[in-house]
Amino acid sequence: MRLLGFEITRQKAALPTGLSSVDSSRGWWPMIREPFTGAWQRNLEVRVETAVSNPVLFRCISLISGDIAKMRCRLVTQDEHGIWSESDNPAFSPVLRKPNRYQNRIQFFQTWMQSKLTFGNAYVLKARDNRQVVTALYVLDPNQVRPMVGADGSIWYQLNGDNLSGLQEATVVPASEIIHDRWNTLFHPLCGLSPIYACGLAAIQGSAIQKNSTSFFQNGAQPGGILTHPDFIDEDVAKEYADRWKAKYGGDNQGSIAVLGNGLEYKPIAVNSVDSQLIEQLKWTGEAICGAFGVPAYMAGVGTAPLNNNVQTLAELYYSQCVQIHIESVELCLDDGLGVGIGTKKDGVTYGVEFDLDDLLRMDSASQMEALDKGKNILTPNEARLKLNLPPKTGGDAVLRQQQDYSIEALAKRDALDDPFGKAAPASPVADESANDNAELDEARAAAKAAQASVKAAAEAAERVARELQQEKALRAIERGLAHV
Image 1 (cartoon, one colour):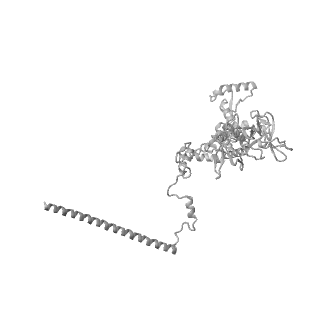
Image 2 (cartoon, rainbow, N blue to C red; image 1 turned 135 degrees about the vertical axis):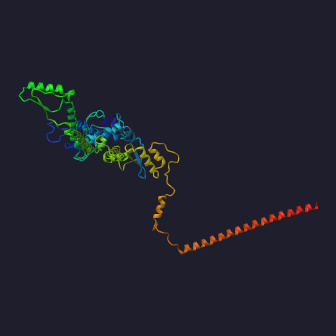
Image 3 (cartoon, rainbow, N blue to C red; image 1 turned 180 degrees about the vertical axis):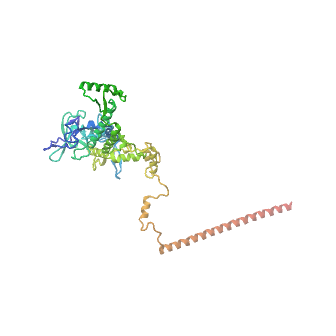
C-alpha cells in the first residue's frame, strides 16, 4: 500500500493466520469508563472530553506536552570514546526537523504527547520513499487504531481511514510501520492506560463542584429553598408564588430583602459555600489529578510554589518525577522507528535521537554564570561560551588549570610507589660513594674558582703598579725638561 506516494510497508507480506484483536476492554477504550457497574445506564460514565474540561487536568496535559515539544530533537553520533555529539544525516535529519507536511516539530510532538497522556497510547504512522527511508511521520487518532497479534506472535495494527494522514481506506500494517508509544500497560503490554483512568472521577467531581458553585451565584436568593404555607394551596397558586419569588429575588435581585405575607415561610435546604468547603474540595481534586500525572501541584495552579526559589532545583525535580519517562520513551521510539536503535550502525557510524535538555532545564542567569565559572577546570572557555550562545575566541579551546595542580599522570606515578605517602628510602652504599664523589668534585670546583679569583686579583694589582710606574716616569721627564730651561 502507498501513502501519499510513499511506501508504508517494507514488503508485501501476507497477513498471518489467527490474527486477533487485543482485548482492551479493561483499559480506557474507547473513551468511556464506568466507575461502577450500571453507571453507563445512569449516565454516570466518565468521558475523556468531560474529564479534560477540568482546568487542572487540562493544564497537566498541556504542560507536559508543551515542555517536551519545546525541546529541540537532535540527531547525534557516538565517537570511539562513547561521547555523543550533534550530527546531520540526509536520511534521518530532515524528518526530525519537519515530521510531516502540515506540522512543525513542536506541533508534532505536542500531538504525540497529548494522545499518549489522554488515551495512554500514541500511534505514529511511518511513510517511506523508494529507498525505504522514513520521510514523514503522522500521529494517528488512537480511536481509529487497534493492535492485533497473530498466531505466530507477530504484531500488526488495524488502521481505519484517515484522510489527513493519507490513508484512503482501512488497512492492516505490520508493527515495522507503526511507532507505538504506550504508557501504564497494566492490563496488556500493547494497551496503554491514561492517568485519567485513575483521576477521572476527581476531574468530574471538580467540574461538578464548579457547576454547582456557578448555579449558586446565578440562582435567585438562597438555592434549594422551600416556600411553605400553613394551609393547603393548589398548584396554580404555588406556581404563582414561585414565579413571584424568582422575579423579585432571583438573578440580579439576589440578596434583596424578602417580605413574606399570607403565612409564607422560606426554609433553605441546601448548605452554603462555606459549609460545603468548596475551595478545599477543589484543592483536593486538583491534587489528585496532579498526583496521577506526576506534576507538582503548584505548576498546575493548585496551591503555592515552594519557598525554595532555586529555579534549577525545582526544574530538576519536575524533570525526574514527571517528564523524564516520556522523554526517554520518545527517544527510544524514534531510535527504533528510524532504524538507529541500540547497536545499529549506518556506514560504520552509531546514530541516535536525543532531546536537548538545555531547553527544559534552564537556570537563572546568576546560577548559570556561577556554574560555568566553577566548571572552568572541566570546560574550555569556548565550550562555556557555547552554553551562552556566544561565538568562540582565539585560544579558548584549552582547559585552564592552576600551576600548583598536578596532572593525573603524575599522580598515577606517585600512587604506583609501594608507599606513596612515606619518607624517602635510605641511600644505598653505591649512592653514598656517588654522593662523596660529587662532594669532592664540588670542593675542587670551589678551589679552582678561588684560585681564579686570586690570579685575577694579582693581575689587577700588577696592572695598577705598572700604571703608577708609568706615571712616575712621566713626572721625572717633565722635571728634567724644566731644569734645562
